[in-house]
Length: 156
Image 1 (cartoon, rainbow, N blue to C red):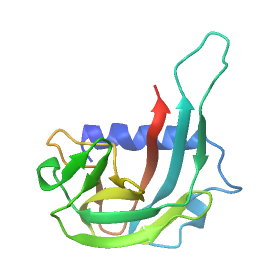
Image 2: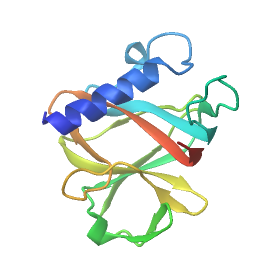
Image 3: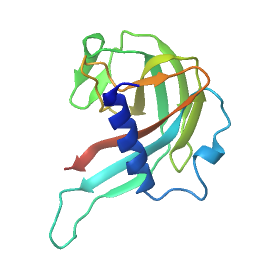
Image 4: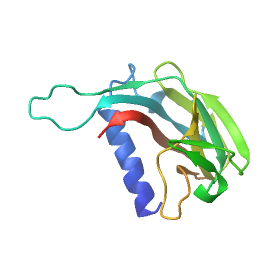
């Protein structure tokens, strides 16, 4: 695992730990032995720090269709505002998170790009140093944990 992936994964688990989660540990609910598992969060509103703590945004688990493509570079898509269309890489699998945003998908080892399906197109907001979109690596015999934060209606 490279340093950037370690930081992103660590941030994701820290963020997930600070959000309202359903009863029980997500890891105890995983039924796959190899693939991707995690939570989809919707963030909306003002997340700017305030002295009085008022006007804070909300962050909740949400059901979304999650699309997993071959590793996709920014040069392989059309981008309009926050959304992607005309993705030139191959769709590998799709899965829908439950109402709390929890999902898992069995998938072979490899590196993939993860998007959510929104009304305006596909959404992803993480890139690596080579402009690959939301890269997630699955290692043999392991489940990679991710937190997908849909935040195009949030202010930071």
